[in-house]
Length: 370
Image (tube, rainbow, N blue to C red):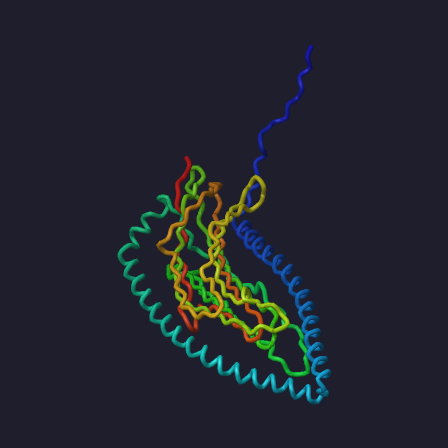
């Protein structure tokens, strides 16, 4: 007689249901944790780079002093030489700054006029087509607008360190604004980002970088019950704004190679869709947009015009229909970098000088599979 083997059921265990509020909280914590881990690694790298640059600067100073002493200059003469070099650089810096400020005023005047013109066009457009866009929601379009959290992060700031050299050195300067106006009341006024980052290298020729991030998490209610997963074919982002960017190449130290590639300004827009997967207990993430909106090159002063509202980007991914909310993670990343003496870089969409970047609905366009 053949003995029958017992066969265990192959059915999957029903996953434990998790409250939406817990998933939402876990999502935000997960995003922040990853950003913090990346930031920590970058800080460790910058700390080592600062030490390397400090030792290099010491070597240059000692070499200059050695050459001066061989030429018969005493310590007092050497100190006077350092002071004269510093005085002449200050005069030159004031002359250059006045010219840059004059051009910048003209740019901001044009920005204000362009922002007003765009606002009139937008108001007219929405008056004509708002009802048609609303009718397309879920037919099939998934519109993301409702905010659940937002925050800002300083991702990178080069440590200038301590520099000697027998004179008072200009260590440069930096500034940044990370203002955001988020429409938590749902009045459909749009979300506004006001990124601004500025650096000037001063007397230090080493690379100087400032990188900041503005993050907004949006949500969408669960997909329609009784239908299959949602296949995304295209994505449309209602993002527009007028701002300013500029960069100035620094004066290269004769003992170093040029750093032309460092004198840049960049503004990057990134969108990631996050979903919770019951089977794995993990968040699935699809980066659907990663676009550089501003990419400045050395020695430019530019009025930056951004308008993605009429553009459709082809995509191919699925949104799970598991009865849970869907989350969209929006990042505006601003980065400026410069090198050599008197290098300068800036991106400005600040609330003080411009109307910033407007973000309306971000829409996933596609169809239900079933």
